[in-house]
Length: 514
Image 1 (cartoon, rainbow, N blue to C red):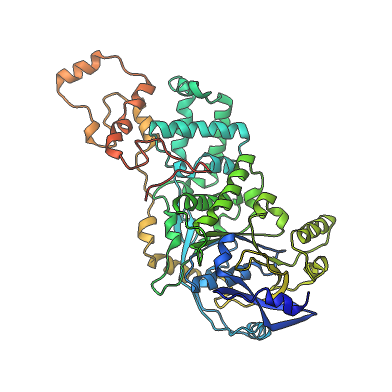
Image 2: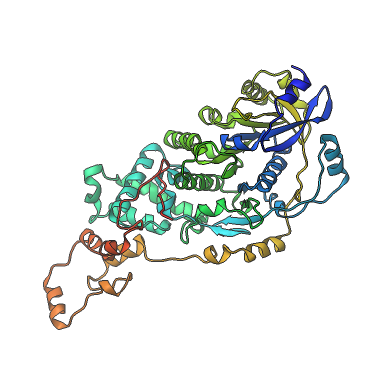
């Protein structure tokens, strides 16, 4: 195959993103642009390569072009260097040289961005989820529970859903687990197998450790509405949502699983749209190998189905990692667009990973095993889907330079952007309202204790009512829970999560009515 034949495979007629220029015979050919059609970016993708080969700049390049085309983007900023997308880049000899080599008319530009932080740890608008919204499958993943413990956790969530005990934060979940293993609550799950005391003990211990690591900040209200990620700016450009993660780099299981919650929540809220001209959202999953490490079979199956099905809802998912082997084969098969940066082959394991990577590409005119070890920073092997959904020829590519700042913005400027956001007032302040913990605690108190949910459920009446209460036997804890304010409020909560058993998605995350 010749250079002209490869270039012809990227000559699309519709809107497309410019990735760079073809490398052939040791030369860069600026008249042979390598592009990816906008319409196929909901077919998902993979950006891979060794550390320092330019993966982050590739994300930035793709994200800013999507924004310019009116497509919202979500970026997980693990290292803290993607915030620069909001500021215009600075010209320098290296940028000018790269632009000349690839035929790029480079001009500095910043893009509309919102900055988020998990639980407010770090610079950004706090992103929180309720324990109920997060669901048992994802929580089992982040707690590293085994299959039996995961199934027991699912039963606990099922019970809380059925009884209207809202699990807002971690203390709510601990309270329900403790109740179900108490003398009063042990019989509640007898008809569906129950929760063994040993398993409950493991769950309680892991929750305690999890909370001690600071995880309590991530669970609570107000719960983040993932619909915020689908917004566009007043000028029609897509908003780039940057989740700042440097403050939680030492908790990779947590942030990778939280990203999966964001995707799962979007999945069951987006309507089916089929093939559309441009994606509704493109989601970049950095450090993707962390998502799959130690994952249960149920988790991997749910993830594979989510990736497969979310395409028809107009959302694209790009996994960013070092080698394709970091991604399970069933997920990798769903990734139609590939940007593979250089790999290193210093050890036998490296050599094995290199050969496995080469096998994931279509036949090409290149010796990929050699090429992938000698490419420079900002160069990659590319194959994408064309406008008909067929793979394009494999193309060695020198990538364009991003137009935005290639590095983090100043911390003071970042804080100012967060304070100026219209979303800050909505999510900045945590709320601790009455939920399962408070209701179970109230049930253990005197029967005549006022209900914190409101005055409608407070006992009333004079001495006669007091004598009647004294004459009646005190109900058991289970009876008190069943007859507490949470259940009396069912009639007042039609259309909310309380008052119905919560419908759950593939990942066990709760469906929300917006």
